[in-house]
Length: 161
Ligand SMILES: [Fe+2]
Image 1 (cartoon, rainbow, N blue to C red):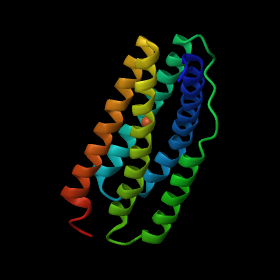
Image 2 (tube, rainbow, N blue to C red):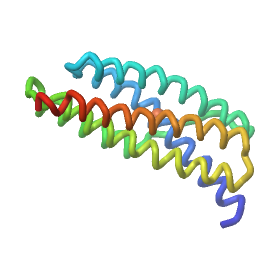
Image 3 (spheres, helix red, strand yellow):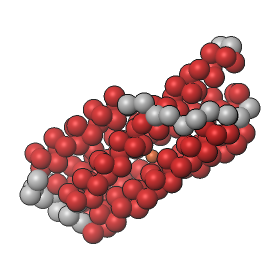
Image 4 (cartoon, rainbow, N blue to C red):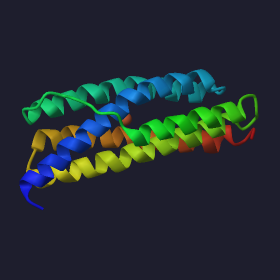
């Protein structure tokens, strides 16, 4: 793939994930409100703050390649959050409600991990060092969040389920 085409793809994917992160802020508020376990509530709150930081980081990344940060609506995130709404409604008041929220949130995390993973690769291929570094930081946060959710699922959410 030529550099110009890869650059186009890189920018398109950056816009998608910027849109996705912004959409997720709303979703995380709902997940926080829906969580029963304090530990899970706290994990969602923490990830909300992290997501705000990730949005700032994306702005820095756009800046580093000389572009204005502009997101676009992410259809995948929209669908994931729609499903999260559905599953929250279906399991509201059930002993499995936290496990259901975790499942929804982990699907989101895996989408983000896939997106940032690709972006890191593109940045590396094009020699955008600053972008690569910033994207790698975010990727690590997403993986940590995913791991934390697994830990909560194993330690409490599914115990009462
Ligand atoms: Fe994120």
